[in-house]
Image 1 (spheres, rainbow, N blue to C red):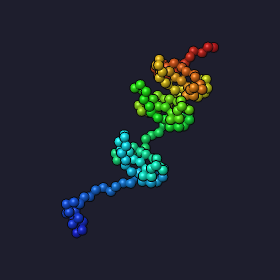
Image 2: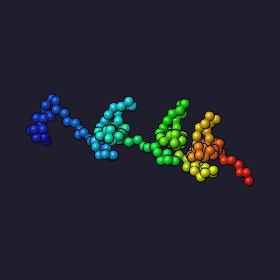
Image 3: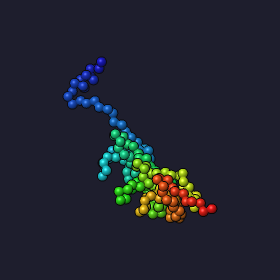
Image 4: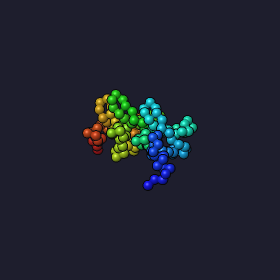
Length: 160
């Protein structure tokens, strides 16, 4: 049962009962996030921009931060890039850091299983002009490479 005031309010033609607005706070500065529109569509941004540059994607009306991947060599963020129709991940500190990783369904490939026998770091699968190969993560300092054998490094025969 509703009281007299509620009944009178609900009987008005222009009255609407909606859901309360949810406020989202910026995790960096604790200011309010606001829904904005940019070149790539809607996104959430800090109301204190430009002093705070926090942004998040708009997923079902809520701010969701994209998963970030870090460079295995220098710990700077990796960025997904396209070159001649092929996707790969490159370090954002390029040209100081020349790390590139293959793209596996929108995620950088991680292959710490195969150590580089020349320097002790690890090998990553790359695509070159002649197809795939395995190269050291510390390229250009270490130029050790191995051929690719169906997605695995093809080990060289021992010379002993």
